Length: 166
Image 1 (cartoon, rainbow, N blue to C red):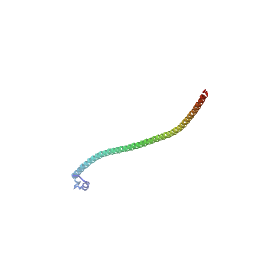
Image 2 (image 1 turned 90 degrees about the horizontal axis):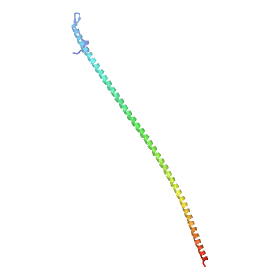
Image 3 (image 1 turned 90 degrees about the vertical axis):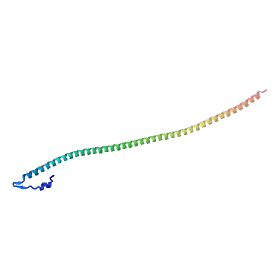
Image 4 (image 1 turned 30 degrees about the horizontal axis):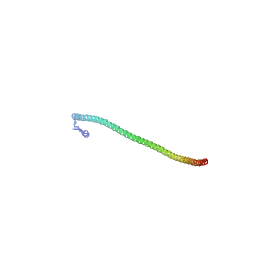
């Protein structure tokens, strides 16, 4: 039977010739001593279990913190990778835009050069036509002159033949 605090407070010993019954007091004290020893042993056992559970709890909390830190680190890494990828994409886009603009400018410059070349070729063609026309007209005049001279020469030869005839 376990003693309760109420049992201890309410315990009444029989009175004897010299006070209380010594056997009854010793028996009660032995019972009380046994229970206190059991309670102390149980208390120590519970303290050991509590220390073990505290150690496990501490270990679990450390694991939880480690997992939390790892997760935070992974999230930061993922965010940093994403940010770096976005920056790299922006750089690539900017470089592509610059290259496209450079190509466009080069193409526009080449187009302007081609237009200038066409205008120059047209001018040269016109000059060539004028020179060719002039040369042809000059040669035609020379041919006309030659023909006229040939006709005059033929006339002169006929006159000379006529005059030489007996």
